[in-house]
Length: 631
Image (cartoon, rainbow, N blue to C red; front, side, top):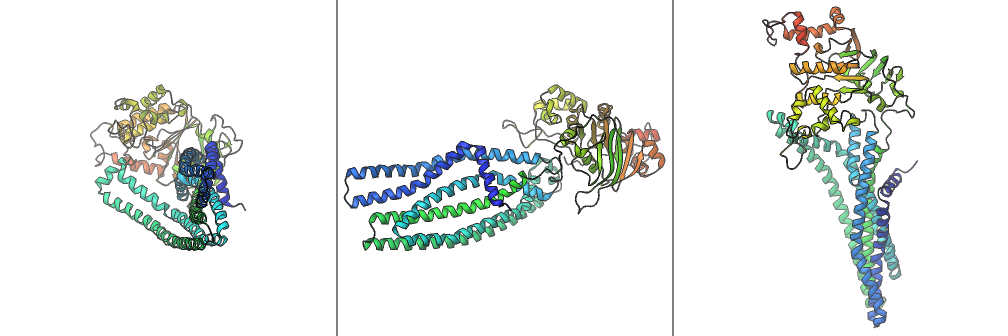
């Protein structure tokens, strides 16, 4: 079995070379020179002192003095040059690391990884470690190499003066190496353990600072509660880190004491030996420098090795993300999806999110004919949104299959499939970008076509709103980001964001399948009527899947499918389902009861259209909103 540690080292070295080969090679050469310079300085110092004691003349001293000056200059200058070169390498490496990390994230075509908390913890640690773990590995390896060269030079020096001292120092360093490696492993374990708490800390901090949450936080007086929850997470994190710090302090204190004892014993021996004539003054000087140099090099090696070991453990999260296989199988030679002519068919589709979760869909058989509108209705949790995820191939069925004109979606490219789908989701995104960019995201292939953006906004009924903004379509729709010469961006209302999300969907004009998941839930009655009029025009002869709790908005669908407990309970047109008197009729009548004559919530009995026909007309546009107002 391959050693994972060596594998990560190879990955880090390969990344450094790919990121900036000149800087990587330069850093290695500078590391060698920096490792040799202290040893050369110590030997030249010994030779100069011995020459002075022996009364050597200028001719003998000049070359030694010149060499000592150059060595001293190298000791001073090389670290600064190395820092510069390593900074160039670090920046290039970070850019490459981010690129490969997020390429790997985008390689997952489905949602299973993103709806898994363990993957979120791994991804967070991968992102955090990508900031500095590769730097620590590469720069640490260079530092270890430099220290090894210095150690070898001084070890030879010590061996020449006192071979026993080399063995004593090396043996004294072994416990330190073992302790540092143990501590690095413990730090990595603690980092993994506290990652959920760190995510919760960020969550509570966001709630206290995000403008979207500020209204409810202040209305319900949640500030102190959320602050306390956040501080509780910070205290737990601090305690875990404090325990490691205390263990580190104890261990390093013991190792420092041991090193001091060894150095003091060696210095005492050197002085006594020089006093008895056993070694020269130059030998004392080089011996003292060698003891200090060996201990410094060993300390550098141990600490850098421990840090690199910790970085390797953390870097494992990065490699786990980068090397992970896609969460959905993608065929090497996917079948091309034809333009939808027949329809989309679900055959005995079963689905659950994991073996520990209950079945969401249970043997669903459904045919969505092309050029027709199919509406999905049912109680919350009936499986409507899950079915949409399967249609978009965010997941694959556990059993059964979904075909597009006979082609199994598993045999097609997810990108090809999604390029043929337009969608408006209930949980649409509010991007902290400009108004124009928010709409352009609907179809980046024509992102430079502002005319298309304006037409989409007009179709969604939001053009006048956007042109009235301080910078028109170039206005930042965020109070988080913005130019420093602006006080803040502009925050749209929930209904305005809903229309903007519709405009984003309208950017796609050649899709075969249109999915509308509560497309007007944040709008008032008049706006809802206008939006559904636009949607009917936009849908045209497209194949459409419409999800809505407002049954008045689905009554004109060609087929209405009622989901209950993951199964299809009823199907038919509005009139057929009303005549059947089943679940659909019960839900429709229940919603209609709020508008009956004399109802406290209804419009009264003296207005026009108070009969059954008027009731159903009003249900088209005035059923109470089911979308939460917390956007």
